[in-house]
Length: 123
Image (cartoon, rainbow, N blue to C red; front, side):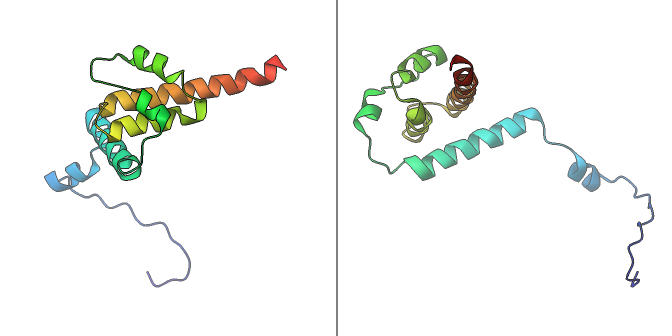
């Protein structure tokens, strides 16, 4: 072991105990999704909870009854570069659920990519 050259460790058969099988298990999709939404909520609260609202963000009155398509229609009134900030601010203020915000942020990202791909073809 004290040799200065690398040697591949021998394969040792480790009996599977309950502790090692739990450590080797992959988290389920719902666990990953819950963790992602929790991190998104923490990020929104940390970054946007204490910011002052701008005039544009005050006009964005989101509430629980709005569907994703209705919120996207509202967001189209905002400049493209501020749409994600408006969503994160609404999440931080409690005007939107984390799952809805996550879906909206994904949609905004896709729309931004598509519009960027179309612009070179138009010229």
